[in-house]
Image (cartoon, rainbow over all chains, first blue to last red):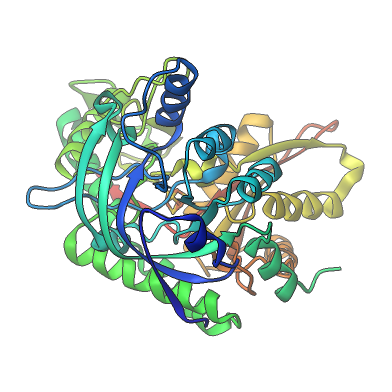
Length: 186
Length: 279
Ligand code: SF4
């Protein structure tokens, strides 16, 4: 397998542009969590001309709704959720500076095109490996939409968070590449 | 007539949902080991290794295998000679879910379909009851995550579509589902019945232990054919490319109307969580 690329968030255009579909990455720094309803609220906030609960510049959004932390734990199990449900909102967040998204599953062509335009990458973490992934999360704090429970926006501090680049800024797609390589069906 | 108190049912359900969500069945872990051997892609092999490690951590720490601890679905076999006292069966099971999801630190994922407001205790659960002979109550907990459940589909084929039509539909559904349902998956297939019976059977098919052969030879052959065709698509673990997208295909068949050939697909992610108790 390819070498591990170390990334520290927030990301800038240069850090994003060097990544290629298939690259294995280790991310350290801050990630913000958001999923279905939180995305709707973030975009509604922008549409209303109000400020977001955090500065989006260079940020990486992790699509996750963790299970509750037990006493003494930072967070419960915390693997990625399926990304296509956020497709509708992704470009709007890229427009205000989002540089990365972490989830699982294919993105719409519109999102892939927007990633080229705005220099943003899409990473996948291993869906369902949630107890293991939680070990790379060192701090977690709800910063907005507390009423949403697991769907609230959290600020996570991660160390050596493993992911793989699915879509890079050149429009490549690891799901397509991987499938073509092993396909036996006509 | 044997009487079972609702409190006993609630307690059993509480224990089952915690156990199901933290302790992956031996058959699933064995399927990971087999997948690791069968997989040619290095990335795919790494996925299997990660899943084995994740299952170990979850079991040791009593942590949820996956953060999505699912909608709580129960298959119940209720003996005709059982009398349930103290509450309705649905209420007893919901009470167990309420307690188990709180005490087990499991995620509460159930909300109103319109307002999206969370019910905060993971109820109501889905209880599918079948009446059977005897005075026992068998409950199987099958919590199901949203990611894989969203990939479910039902089609009502024309009878002329035959076996080929069935295979084509199932393979195509898996190709469309791609990386979304967290492969390596188990593909549950319902064939025949009415629309709702077919869908229920697709999910019920997932209760069979992975690798346990279908006792019906014709269905066993059909399962093997589908498995080969699905894996030939090359999607592999997590959809990253490889030979093992599906670890198994399980079919449940039921007679259907002369005008119909219903086929349902219910994909289960690798977090295939099932626990049962007989009271
Ligand atoms: S599909 Fe299964 S493994 Fe994947 S996130 Fe959902 S519950 Fe977890």
